[in-house]
Length: 223
Image: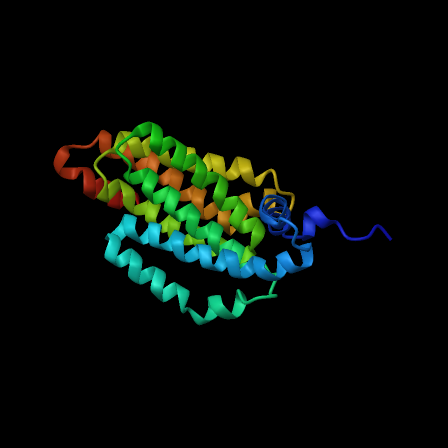
């Protein structure tokens, strides 16, 4: 009798992004025609973003190859074809963009730039999950990656505040979406971020109190 609770059950970011981009780029096009092209546009933009992401990891050549492989990826073509106004292309775009902001922020030598990118990553992750629930699978590799940071990075003072900043922004922005909110924060996705973040802080503290030769051993024992 009360109808459907849109904010609780719908992929709000998909609808809002379509509305905003139509308002900016729609011109005289019909909204229906715009939504037909919408998945193709964001699927194509994903190839640009994955180029930027992989270039951060492995250089320009690797970035170009990854963009090429994604552009001919059958799942992306099938789920991002013309007329398929669904959430996967947009969720994938935001998910890859979040990874780019996160990794480039962690690699940035300029701390102000790093803060901006980490905040952008923290904002983009909930957008991706709100657009497409499958984006939560991005969270698990991020959590595993966080667990390795105390052992592979020497700039512990930076990591000590950078990762909690990212996690805090993710949780705060998630509260803006009724469909996410507590379901994400207290679910597998939230735990996959919160536990590694707590581990990083605790592990770095333990390593700071350990002898130079025993830092890695004590960190691994804590893990």
